[in-house]
Amino acid sequence: MKLKKYLTLTRAGIIEALQFRLSFVVMVIGNMLYLIVVYFLWKAIYTSAGTDVVNGMTFTDTLIYLVLATALFNFMEMYTVWEIGRNIQSGKIVLDLLKPMEYRKYLFWSYSGSFVTQFFLTFVPTFIAVAVVTHGAIPMSINLLYFVISVVMAVSINYSIDFIVGTICLYTESIWGINIMKQVVVLLLSGATIPIAFFPDTLRTIVNFLPFQSIYNAPLSLLLNGSPDIETLLKTLGTQLIWCIVMMTISKVFWKSSLRQITVNGG
Image 1 (cartoon, rainbow, N blue to C red):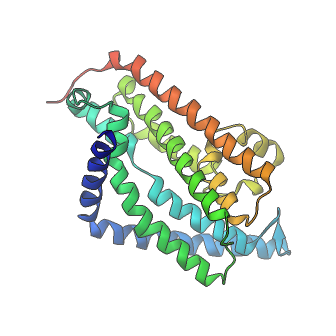
Image 2: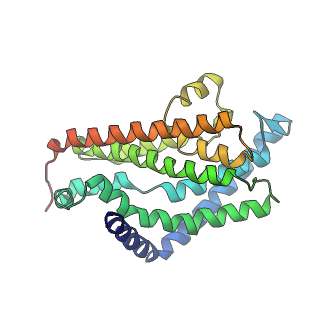
């Protein structure tokens, strides 16, 4: 019965997401322009480097990585921070807290419909297009299963980070600047903007101890590696699992300790 309750929210989210088809078209056009810029930027970088392989990655590897990172961002981004901020500023948060479901779970499952819709409308077509255009450069093996498992944990980590940042709005009552800073930090340190392989050694070591690389770099590294060795696999998935638990715990504790800060300014 519990699962049915959650899936009802997912279904409602899918229906709502499908109502805004124009926004999907605009997003696709925006992504195409971004990817064109990425293509020419990295083409210039590899040309100036004078070699086919830079930091262990070919131009094709880098392009596939960045294109799929963009596609991952499009369906993993739930805009949770903005939702929490609006609810706090309007006072709607009080009504949400009265619902017979933990607010953190309610918010996640409310956005899960959008997550599912974006996965099938953006990531899957992008993945297929990249696989066809690159003539099989993406391995199609057991790595796909590892990738799916990794993405599930990446979604959990990303949501927990968003929820923590959204909770800060209870103290600031304004979230715009904080959320913009969060997006910049996550996109940079997760490898979504620049592959982590291109980071300086010191920065790469630091990033490997942070949760951000588990959001984009971890699933993409497993996807592009056709047959990762057992040590790499366990290290990657194990690190993600640890961060799932840690970030989920922090977000829950921070939320509960922050509820006393609620002040209703809206109607």
